[in-house]
Length: 75
Image 1 (cartoon, rainbow, N blue to C red):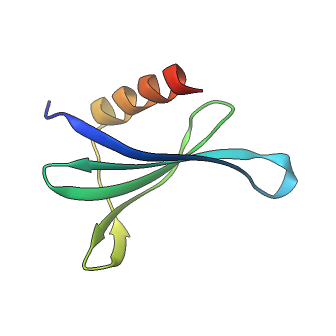
Image 2 (cartoon, rainbow, N blue to C red):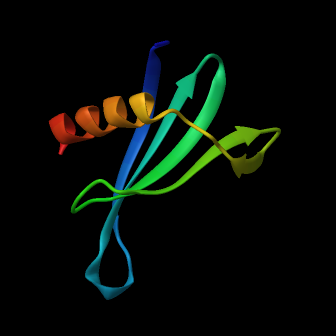
């Protein structure tokens, strides 16, 4: 699997007291933004950033598991 570089992590509280973790990362010179529920790290959404526009991203489960492990280490 190609490595990624996490560039930003934001933990925010949304409505109904649910916290989310948003990660920005770079993979193969592409920028991505993914959001997880903080409580169980369930994937909420994944976006690829192209020309200042976000489009839905299709990322592998292996990559998502790796990102989850990195999040666990940081929070």
